[in-house]
Length: 288
Image 1 (cartoon, helix red, strand yellow):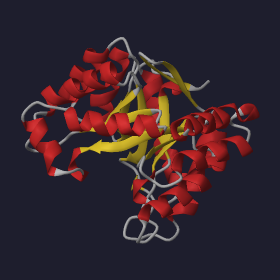
Image 2 (cartoon, rainbow, N blue to C red):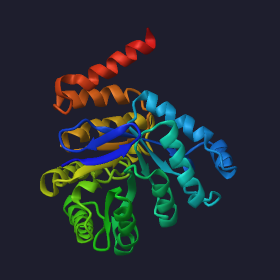
Image 3 (spheres, one colour):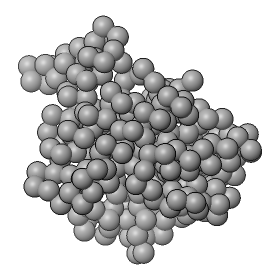
Image 4 (spheres, rainbow, N blue to C red):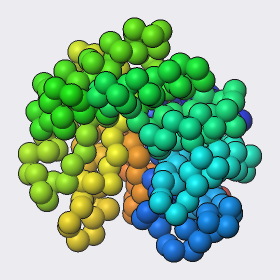
């Protein structure tokens, strides 16, 4: 069964055989202009909302909110940002935090919507703090296969081991596997030339052996390279046929949405090309 998220816009399903879900990664304040930090310090979210809306127009399905900063009150501002996204965009969201107090406040603020927690690792202390919150609010989670046994492994088999730790821990408190998106781990190819191949092997194992939905944060792929979003897009397109179901991406990547829509069509994740044609018609209206 696919992972299911909900929002005022309706239900979003993520999983095998379904179109690739694109998640806007530009609501990460550490990587943004100083104005955004200044606004958050004044309890304002105007500029972040503008970025989120622009991504939605481009074709993003949801947003990833990461507002951790030593000069920002995350406990106050994460729920405020989550509420603003719910009211202004109506799309599903990922709450990118390990701050349990901020996470609980944000999940309570958008209830009964089903959000995505980004993320939980296989480390015992992280599982102990995050899983009860996910259970309480019925949230889905990104599972990051970093654990007490292998740490951040460079081997697919060891990532699968850590992923099983997360799945077993969830099962132990009644969280179904369908509430997990397992991260296959995208590292910088400039620093680790084998990383793409390992990620593909990991995706395949997650899909076929663990039968769990998958996700990648694509932004690391082109790190250290010129025109890094070109590398990011190539990485993303290469990963989809191997079992990638959702990606955290920069919506300003040239050709992103049309390329992903095309890939979904040719691997039969977009039956009869309906989603591709819908997107194409929408673009024609904008330029008419």
